[in-house]
Amino acid sequence: MDKQKIVVFSGAGMSAESGIMTFREMGGLWEQYDVTEVASPIAWENSPQLVMDFYNQRRKQLFECEPNEGHLLIAKLEDKYDVEIVTQNVDDLHERAGSSKILHLHGELKKARSTADESLVYEMDHWELKLGDVCEKGSQLRPHIVWFGEAVPAMDDAIELVRQADIVLVVGTSLSVYPAAGLLSYIENNIPIYVIDPGSPAFTPKENITFIAEKASVGMEQLTQKLF
Image 1 (cartoon, rainbow, N blue to C red):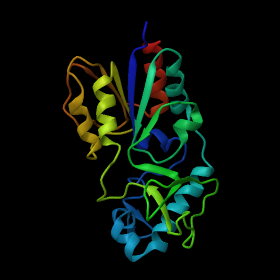
Image 2 (image 1 turned 180 degrees about the vertical axis):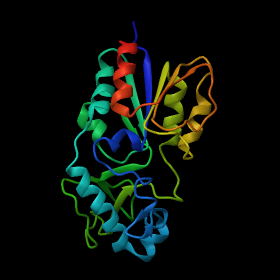
Image 3 (image 1 turned 120 degrees about the vertical axis):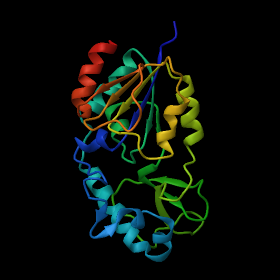
């Protein structure tokens, strides 16, 4: 018998317990700079060193963080279910927790890519990316991140996964940020949706939505008992 497919949407609250600061915790600012201005193609064009510094600091922090209990419990779901993760997060904590199928909507912090050929993507085993670090074609490397104002290449794949889901988990995100927020509209009305987030949901309550107002680790503990 085929396993039921669980599709997990995870957001910033998923990794907050691991010590990774969310943009909201930064107050939308990083060293007095508006985050949306630092994380943009225009910023890269005008102030590449500033953009490098921003992502280097975030990457250095990530190398010092570990997956939390919420990540581990999601990985454990694979014992019984076919689990696919669609994450807004750019960290690798789901991977390190043991989950095997993760789709990163907004890119990956521990990767760099060529500015000349976006198909050239490189794993990073260190935290610092510098001006002068180039790809095999000799072009500057940039963070492998989807910046504000850029298209989200993985959206079509995410939509396809959502359409296949038997169960949907939304963990650590209010799904208020588009285009990811639009993914809920592709879920059939009879599919159970479990939302784990201590804040208020940003979408209209429906009969098929169960809201667990807890942080990721606590909410996943409660939900795991229900799903196993």
